[in-house]
Length: 82
Image (cartoon, rainbow, N blue to C red; front, side):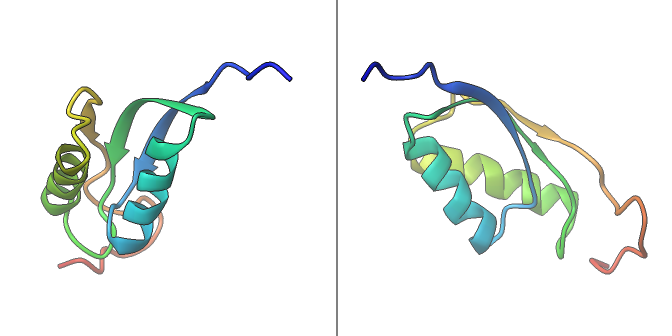
């Protein structure tokens, strides 16, 4: 059976431990080609989530994947990261 072309995706994340595991699995999968990552503030601020995403990609030598900072605060609930 021929291999399907990898699906081009963008990962939107607040990379803590749980998201980091998912990102590592996506990076290891032949099913996905990651075009970039966008970070959002989760339980911690946007600066930390963006730095975590970059560090995770550096750890697996995938600095070729761009990281973009997204929303600094939640859109529909109070910001609990401060």
